[in-house]
Length: 119
Image 1 (spheres, rainbow, N blue to C red):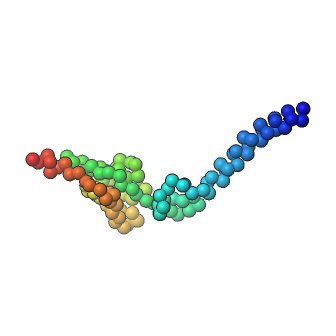
Image 2: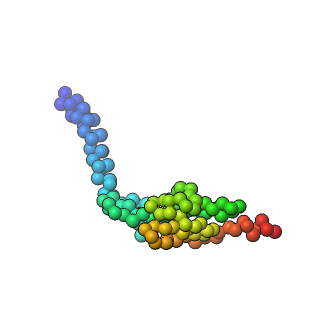
Image 3: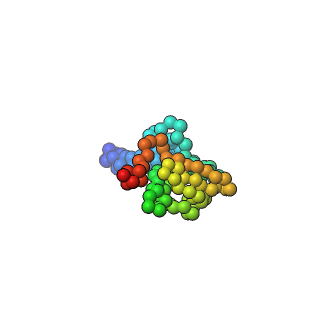
């Protein structure tokens, strides 16, 4: 009977023990994060400066759009407290706290279809 009681107690305690590491996981670093990468908002930092990541731009047929922080935006809109001033094929100019900030696409080949359409 003693073995039977110990088995029931272990079945109750085992799931509770497995939950304890989850409570401390907020303090752990992401092991898959590349070295040197820092995010603008870290837990515990209340006045983190906003950041903007430019993923792509579309400048064609009178349209000027960009994808910043996974959001489609155009000139005049705001994102993370910054107003979009201009969108070019490889960069976007923002106004943040009365300062002009330029964010660029990652260094890679930028396809310019406008020249091919002229031929």
